[in-house]
Length: 98
Image (spheres, rainbow, N blue to C red):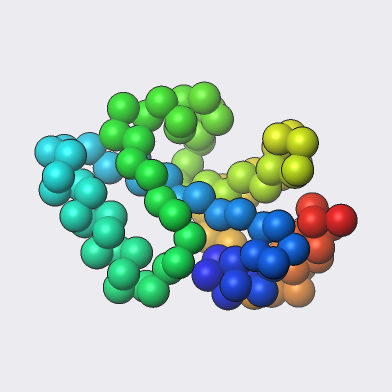
């Protein structure tokens, strides 16, 4: 995802990671920050311990990636691991950014 973010950010790609971990807010925030730093992820992340965002998007599995177009319409949902460097994934992103 980080590679796709760097490659397509200038064309308007936005990525927002959402952590649904529960626990003491400071501990969860520290773990999320550590995870992002360890993987050198540069896109933003938000904490959703009450599953408000997850509920709104009817999350069915982790991880899940939603591809949302410029108008805010969900165009695809990928449940589970997705290789965002693959040609198939790049085609999806290219289509979304047109």
